[in-house]
Amino acid sequence: MLASPDAISTLTDRYQTTVPESVRRALRLGKRDKIRYSFRPSGEVVLSRSTSPDAPEAEDPVLGQFLGFLARDMASHPERLQAVDAARLERLQSLVAGIELDLDAALSADDE
Image (cartoon, rainbow, N blue to C red; front, top):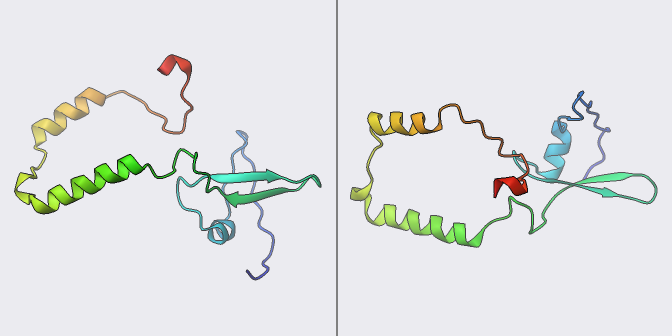
């Protein structure tokens, strides 16, 4: 990789930052990817793309097989596909109205 100028980002009051475009490109990062921070004895911190198999975003073989099954079934039997009508959509929306969900929040023992 060719050397490029250092990238700089700023921490917000909540200790959040935006990963600069040059870093995202160099690490081939996409939305929802995980970032690994490796600490060196010298005090340096190395930023890399996480490829840990235990990362929550790791591919689930069971889910992959299920999605493959669905894709094959839809391709084999398109006549079974049905549009969601307005009444059903309204019912679904009423069931989740007012519910807030943070997909990034850690689960607590109380959530089980």
